[in-house]
Length: 237
Image (cartoon, rainbow, N blue to C red; front, side, top):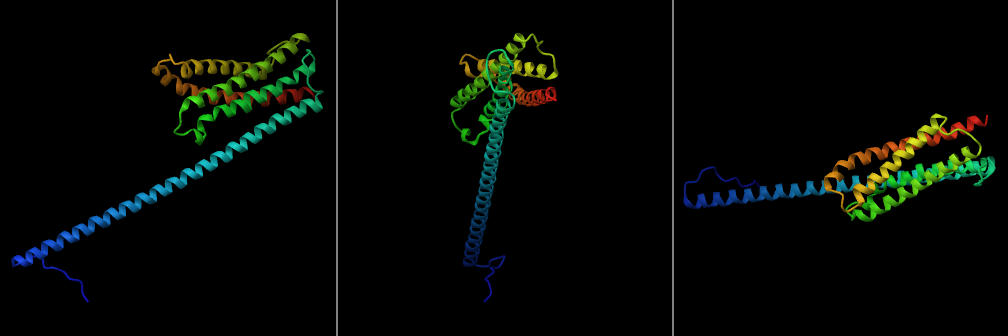
């Protein structure tokens, strides 16, 4: 059986009517096929996008949990180091008071600060009201700042009691500059993003600087903690 192919021209009114109906049928069939193909391609693109996003979310949470476990492990190891091998903790101006310094700095500037910095990156926050997450971000950062300030008080009070000069090494200068930048960052963030009276133009201007400075402070915090632990280990040789 052969497919019917109508003539290109018609000689009678009935043939012309038949040819017109056949052309309309073919055009409708072609449009339907094109629409079906477009819908199928769109469905495939949506499925591919969902699959890619799901893999990204799983990878993010895996990396986040890994970093969180490593951060907690750092705090535990530093605490054990100062408790078991450096005599423990006290707040009496002795060397035992100094042992609070590395524990508080690692806890505040690395673990708490790092967790506070990624709160806006968590997929759970996507498409939700930002105010609760802003408050949580500010609260975690404030706790990190208080830990770092308390760590500085521990070492400065220890130096004062034992007549030791302050800020005598590269580590100490990196640490004090990091804490000063952190304090400025927190105050500017409070003024720019949490106070209702702050203008929108100021928020738009502050946002990229706030994000960039936050990353720099985290890097400086890690450098400061590593250099401080190495410095203390070198002194013990």
